[in-house]
Image 1 (cartoon, rainbow, N blue to C red):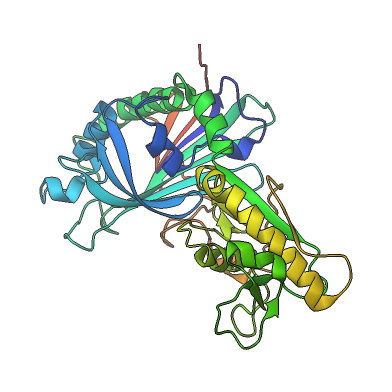
Image 2 (tube, one colour):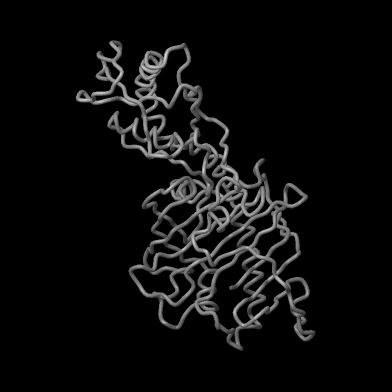
Length: 380
């Protein structure tokens, strides 16, 4: 594994929430041409699995990554080096996780899809940012897994690694402070709507029922718009109520094809919350609210009383704690288990490596290289 550690990177206009320093991949893909573009890099969204998690066609051909192909690539040919540079678009899985491994951290992980080709080059990597005591400075760690456990440096390469690391410093500084990035972060924060349901003490909310339903609640007010019968939402047998599943069924009853998500930025939302693209929500909101109002009337008729489930927009997201969500014990949010964040025991550097005064290049083992820089990368 190769790791580059920058302990102090200055950020202009840092986000109020430090875990939002990195932008979700699907938001980058949507606005890449008009807001904060990266020359020589493009992403086309194939599928969104959840906010911050998607499959993309990616194309990248800029200088630093070409050098990475030279130093860390494979002699098997260009098809084995597509993690860094691509002659043609390649399929990749990109995932962002926030407040992981620690509160305020942001982890962006990427993995190539090798199912359609053999690849003995680098195919997975991770980018981690962490706030420091100074709100305008972050530490940055970049890691990628080498193709073979016994991978060794070529003798000619070592003197040039320091120069490559300095170039990587400048590139990371530019990426995190590039023109338009503050606007892109704001768009990212507004990209999804978090919905929350309340007042369900008398049971789960209702769903529109078909005409042949034998166990339904009828309301005359729904006849005019085609929803006279309602049924209880049962969900999956033995499982707790889940708002995402309920709204997915509700939207299907309206013949609306939209995605509802129970996870956000690599973490599961609490059962009474879900996320939806703001664009999708604005398209279905008026019709949904009109029909959902009928659900309230049917719910009161079925259960008595004056209370009925209500839906809140733009709720503050709340996440299932690690204690309650056992899968968090297996490094959630990273698409590959062998990319981990762990404590590193650093060996001494040979005295003859005089070039490494401010950028320490340390060989820990035959297969792991650690770069560490304690300089402040100013943005001016």
